[in-house]
Length: 112
Image 1 (cartoon, rainbow, N blue to C red):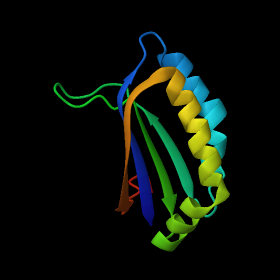
Image 2 (image 1 turned 30 degrees about the vertical axis):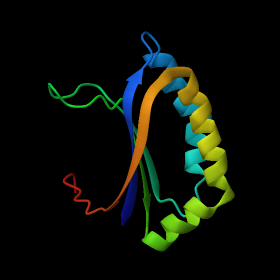
Image 3 (image 1 turned 135 degrees about the horizontal axis):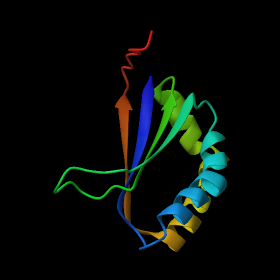
Image 4 (image 1 turned 90 degrees about the horizontal axis):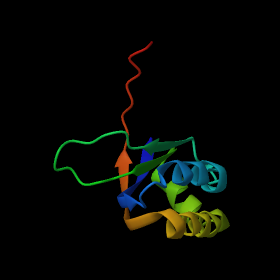
């Protein structure tokens, strides 16, 4: 499985954390869920971090079966819609940068 992470490095405007989270979940998540071929979409909001660690208020992880499916999803019209929705929310609540990392995931379910 391939997981593409988006790390939102920066800060949410003071006092806007709840509004940011609600906007992401209501306005942007439906677009991320629409990526063709996606197996799972995980939106992770920061709760705490190590002292000295960079501020990353949100991490998005979208998993796909393989790299070809990632490439097809990124080439699809959904990406433009998702990017526009993301940028609209970020412009209102976020100051920072986003960087992406594509990883080969090896999940181990310890509950089974």
